[in-house]
Image (cartoon, rainbow over the protein chains, first blue to last red):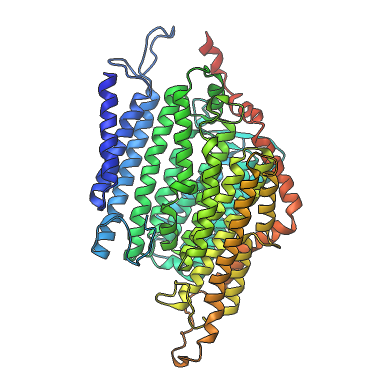
Length: 116
Length: 516
């Protein structure tokens, strides 16, 4: 299972990085979304993968294992933030496209070098 | 437990919400309340700085949860200093925004401004790495709104880049935090410091990866060389008061590097040694070089200032990368100086652009603008400070940096880079200043009948604000002794983290139960 999850994260990240390097805003935003999915799954696994276990310590002896609840809280925060951020970037990219009739991500309108 | 520590976070948050809900159509009320809020923030920051000056580390447990379990805010000399710096800069920038009418050119300037202050103050005060991420996001999402304030195709496209770049930075931040949590099982900075110190010496691969990833994130924020590409385009196209406020944002990155890499991955934590210190210094030196050469090569004032910001961040990071108390004193002094100098330069660039009208941003001779002499004087004062010429604080700051680098390996390189690039910056700034402000008198006879109209915006308040931002530079020069004494104490506190660890972790009675 570790191999499966790890390669899923790797695949998402690779696809995300590839898309982020494209020239138009739409693939870049999709790429950013893929990267945030990758990081969400990654955060989820940082508490170690455990199946069918409650996220709370139930017996006080500490003998029973449990799923670490903290990464789940972190993922929740990360999901909310990345969701909001993606919405913002879509809005800004859309208004940039509508106002300048170009959805290229790099700016070269003034003929500047260094349009990173 | 003093509740004042959380005030720099709560006050802007409440004020922003009230501004947005109650006075969204009343620019006057927005201005009054927002300025009053910033003045109040400055007063609170002063109070906090006074209470932290004695060297005590005050901890605020949010929700009264003890340290490694709950989120804590920590007030020590460094965080108090940074909050004070933020509030002082914010007041100047806000007065300029009001005086120049920038805040009327789009919606919600003051609400976003306050949210930005909330994020910045929170990032300086928090004692929890994940909470640092959250405050980074707060300040970023406010900065996205501010960045595109006023609109316009070029600004929106630059804004898109800025947002995408920072989203990638945030993703990297999460990867770094995840890695660190996977190794240590905690994200409280003090607890991390303890746990990192206890890690077995033969199992350090992951924590080293985490440490380097985290440094990359902060390097993006601080515009360290290979990761600086977002800055020139964003800052040059942002509204001037916003660009001036962003002068503090790069410092958030520098602060985070200072905090994490003295407390958690400090000089004593031998396991991460060699993973980042090998390339931090060369990267910082390259940043200085690129920034200063950029000043010489820039074709418009906005870019010139943006590269000046990169160059000064480089100088600051050179001092940070030395990781020694003396060098950190120099870094902090230079940090305060460069924040105000950068902000003042952005405001001057804006004053020139406003008066020159369309396409006036380029550095070329045009007819003298109204109030040419006054604006030129602000430009040259801030340029002298930025380039590090005497008599202003830039000179003292660079002197401190050079002095701190005297005995380290590679001192010759550091000295050579800083001194040569200072010369380049002086040439670049002098060329830009003389072209923009003086050359125009030669061509004035050609087209006298189309003299530029007197500006409708940018009255007295804008000048007061711009000169107000220069005042700390003069003050820091005159009071260099007391200031460096305080910064010495700050640096000493940073390199003796035991007091910090004790203060944060002492209130943890739960530990005894865990041990059973």
